[in-house]
Amino acid sequence: MKKIVVAGEILVEIMADTVGDGFRGPIALTGPYPSGAPAIFIDQVARIGQPCGIISMVGNDDFGHLNIDRLAADGVDVSGIGIDSDRPTGSAFVRYRADGSRDFVFNISHSACGALPKGDAVQAMIGSADHLHVMGSSLSSPEIIAFNIEAARTLRQKGGSVSFDPNLRKEILDAPGMADAMQAILSLTDLFLPSGEELTLLTRTKDETAAVAELLESGIQAIVHKQGARGVTYFDASGSRFVPAFTVEEVDPTGAGDCFGGAFTALWLRNEDIDRALTLAAAAGALAVTKRGPMEGAAMLETITAFATSQGRRI
Amino acid sequence: MKKIVVAGEILVEIMADTVGDGFRGPIALTGPYPSGAPAIFIDQVARIGQPCGIISMVGNDDFGHLNIDRLAADGVDVSGIGIDSDRPTGSAFVRYRADGSRDFVFNISHSACGALPKGDAVQAMIGSADHLHVMGSSLSSPEIIAFNIEAARTLRQKGGSVSFDPNLRKEILDAPGMADAMQAILSLTDLFLPSGEELTLLTRTKDETAAVAELLESGIQAIVHKQGARGVTYFDASGSRFVPAFTVEEVDPTGAGDCFGGAFTALWLRNEDIDRALTLAAAAGALAVTKRGPMEGAAMLETITAFATSQGRRI
View 1: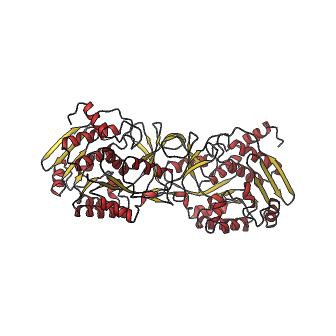
View 2: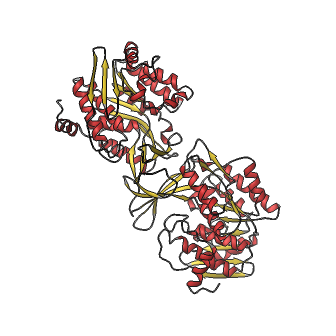
């Protein structure tokens, strides 16, 4: 089975227990939960049963060990996680507002995961990989951008593949070098996983149909356009198909896109039937929102399969 | 009235709701509470009614604004607080173990308060000060050490005074330059506020009586030796006196020493009767432990006075 590797932020998330505005006074909280978009993605990959690993840094504190223990227990190769004895593990405080939007207090770029580890363990991890997943949220420094571009080139040169989830807000593209970095990653991408308006964010055309054609002509094999509660549309050279989302009681939407992406990428690498892969990935995304905590809803493949079947989907 | 200024860390504290070991999984928490030893000290000074200010840095996030709003509301001059647009406000997660000891996860040295602000506001704050308080826990970088030594010299040259609370663990003295920094501050100190074994930590002799003599001979005017739940012993050239602690139901001991120090330093600068100042400061320290949150127990002077009277102490 092909091994998926991702390089990017490992965080803890601290969640406000009540809906409201921000963190201007003491409120009830729950945490630390293991978190970080690439960490959630790779945990879902592991729970699908796919070999996988992560390259990241954590602090030498409970928050770091919590993440390492969780990922290792789920089967993620954690040999690429470095421990920074000086900086703390990254963190994100999250509170939902009444309108469903969120307030955050982040400690990421100056935390341990603001840099990647160096040395033999990282090279060994890239050497052991068949597939690299690039998470746009992780492209937070020139060093991490260069690392991902270099790793993507290495993987492609040896016959491996690359998936890319832009996972960014439009404003981030204005950061110095970011548009170029995204284009460089996109030019090395086999499987593209944009959400909503990200489909046309990196294309010359802003028309969706034309954007899909442009992306496929540029060398991308497959595009999975995530449209949240609506569903997903898949595009490749043979055509397109739409798979509706599952309806579930939403407890915590954080991590849904990452779990969808992790499940789909693993199944795609297994050459699963595309309809089945899309349906199971949609089920993984749906299950992700039924549990509190960004990584807590990542489900095992048999749970995902049983859920999809219970909802009357043919898989 | 004389203005007290302190330079050092402003943090938020996140407290575990349950007694136990560390933060290796999601648990109930409450926070963010305003915190940081110098911030607690100066908030207590303000609640005594003494002019005061703080020099520090916070992030441009809810945790920073929470602290600024709280200190300003209590009357602290916050014009010396800089806002770092890049780094987050410092934080401390705290959990009590069954044996009363504590587990922490800190983000301090790489947070906004890992450095001090620069510029006119800081110089104006030092210029407006009559008294500098130095908190040993704040002497975390060569830059902050140099700033405090320079400020202490400036204050003394213009007829002001300096108080010093070592607030450190013995192991910290082994850090490069730390023992020299502590000695430099001690040589500029008028009012020395050690806790427990800190009394002899910076003296040549390790005998308490001889240490007191050594400190007074070196130019220190007054020593207040804090002995926790036992009480405090005061020493000056005229002799010594002991004031027992108040007995209260302890909810959260964090901040007790800082509130004691803030209250005593303010009253000492007013030339209050020493017995009265010690008794009221002991009352402030006692009230500090009756509320959850490091700064929440800092009480107004009339509350402190009423409490001390209600406990039968003559003030």
